[in-house]
Length: 94
Image (cartoon, rainbow, N blue to C red):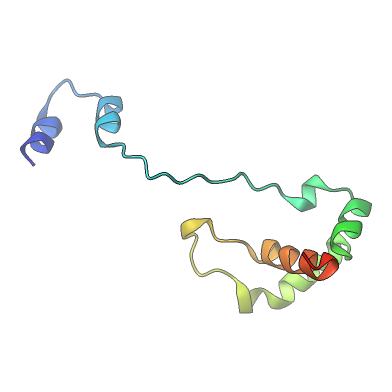
């Protein structure tokens, strides 16, 4: 605890030094999620999910209040992402 007090009171401590001292890696790796609405053309989207983009957006609005995450912690999936995962499973069985 004395080290912490010294670091806070040190007149020449930079923010980078403090970050280096207290940065503890937690071993988490987050994948960058691609947006299927942006990634796929309308025909590719329909082939992959068996619904058009407009239909998926409509369905997401209908079920939003039932499955919307209550927190943004842990990078929870959006309603549209949850719906697309479900539709993909129903379309392929995988």
